[in-house]
Image 1 (cartoon, rainbow, N blue to C red):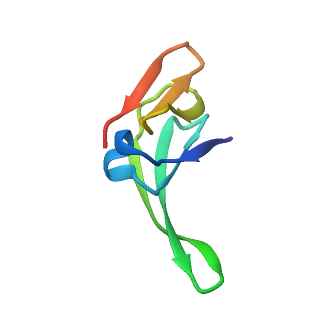
Image 2: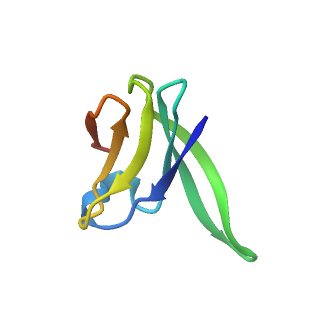
Image 3: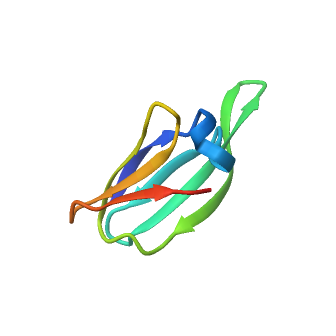
Length: 82
């Protein structure tokens, strides 16, 4: 089951700046999808795996600085340092 995510923006986003970050609840995988501008609007570019070891990710969120976090069903909060 795919977990919706956020488009990383801000000084806290680091190398994820501009990328859409999302997860898979069952597999525990977190990906980043490159967002690119084209003549007809935004499109998808490369997809990279950020981690495969988060148990049951339930949400991908960011804070006011743009730092991206993955929340898990166990209540754990994982900061993505990219």
